[in-house]
Length: 115
Image (cartoon, rainbow, N blue to C red; front, side, top):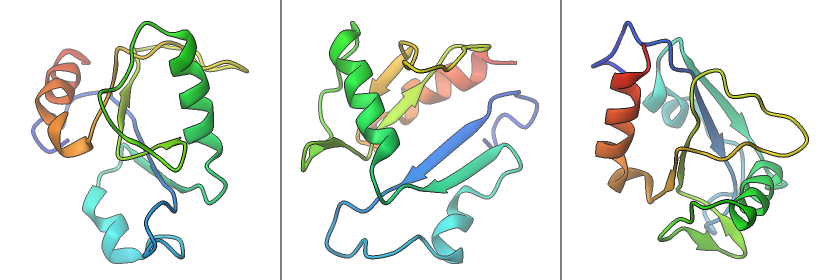
């Protein structure tokens, strides 16, 4: 985000309990890792979004190489084209892979294109 301050990209970071240490919503120090006005962060203890992405992944042409734990997708980067509309069914992403740290080059390319 810092490399592209002019980008109109919006980031939704969804935190969910997967590991035994994930017993509550992330605190300030964790949320500050994504400190940018374009970032919206959510706590999803019921895995609602993860389940929706997994359901959309089943019917899409894009399948992650990783990130299934306890039946939920996690530590995953999902990127959608500009002006993509979300409805009852999620749109097909342009990127769906992880873990997040390994998708940085792909995400960097997508953010650089989104002006």
